[in-house]
Structures are given as C-alpha cells and as structure tokens.
Image 1: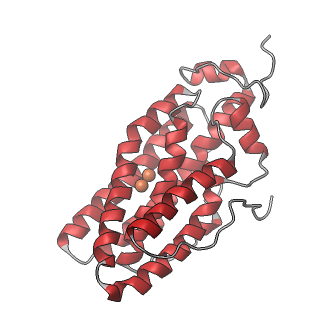
Image 2 (image 1 turned 120 degrees about the vertical axis):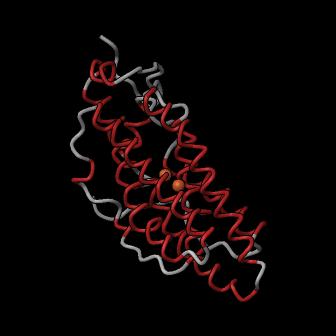
Length: 244
Ligand SMILES: [Fe+2]
Ligand SMILES: [Fe+2]
C-alpha cells in the first residue's frame, strides 16, 4: 500500500479522472473536491453579486456588451467547475454558503472595473497554481479558463486606467481599491489551514495560503501604485479568519 503523503514528501503522481481519484481514497477526493467546490461557489457568487448587476450600471452600449460577455463567462466558469464536482459525486457545493465577503453591494461602474482588475487577479493567481495540480481534470479546466480570467483583468485594468485619466474619478477609484483589496485577501484562506496542508500533501496545490496571498498583493500593488498612481491599502499578508 502507498505510504500516506506528507508535506515533506507530497504525492507527486497525476490523477487522470474521477475513477482514479476514488481509487486513491476518500482523502484525495476530499482534497480535490474542496478546491473544486470553492470555485463552484465563488464563481456563482461573483457572477450574481457583481457581474450581472454591472450590466445595468454600464454607461454605454459597448460597456454593457462587455459586461454581458464577462457575466456569461463567469456563469460559465461556475457550470464548468460544477461539472467536475458532479463527476466526483460531491455533495452540492451550493449547500454551503459562499464566503461572507460576498455580502457586498456593487455601487458603480468604476467600482466594477476596479473589481475586475483586482479581484479577478486573485482568481488568476489561484488558477495559475492549478496548472500544476495533480488532479488532471482540474488542471485542464484551469488552463482552459485562464485566458478568460486574464481577459477580465485586462478589461478591468484598461477601463480603470481610462477612468483614472480624469482626476474627478480618482477618489472613487481610490475608495474601490481600498475596499476591494481588503475584500480579496480572505480568498486565499487562513494562514493556519488544515485544508491547505491537505491540498499540498496531495499535490492539488503547491503553495501555502500566505504565499499565494503574497503573490496577489505584489501583483495588485504594482498595478495600483505604478499604473494608476493610487495608494495601496496597508494589508497583512496573514489572515487568521473568522469562525471555524
Ligand atoms: Fe471566473
Ligand atoms: Fe473573472
């Protein structure tokens, strides 16, 4: 029998499909399943709370068209992650609530474009890591969806830079940066996380939550400070979480 993987000697194989995942045992299914389920929930929550309302806030037909496209893609991401959840016979991921940070009301189009530049960058950071994931269906899905997530970030950056050219917009953009950077930090999980240990032992992920959070902070800070000339909020790279 295979020795249980550890953080020092993680699982280094590749798992072709759900049948192989089940053959490795319930711990492997739980590890892949938890990452898939969080994407199922977050893609749906994001599409519902941000992308769909943005269509109504978009100021021009072209902006509405772009917002529709982005909303369509985000709902599509939800459906595609949900298909992986179904293949693994996971309990309906929507039976657990999305992160409480999704109790958020999108107020304006400038806030939406900053959201795409900042929050979707977190999704890019998380999906880039999944390109090395031991569960190949999840690896393939991340590779397939990354161009769309990168497009969302590129859209958000270009639109933020355009709005930022008018000094009258800067206070609103600055406020959005402050709110949305803080909003995003919990997505990487708690600093002390038995789930993250599980993911790394099984090669689902390779970085600690704090390492992924630090990568996001470095990349988002460089956009905010160097390209927008705005302030980046003071943030902790650690997150102890709330509750369980
Ligand atoms: Fe997405
Ligand atoms: Fe996105």
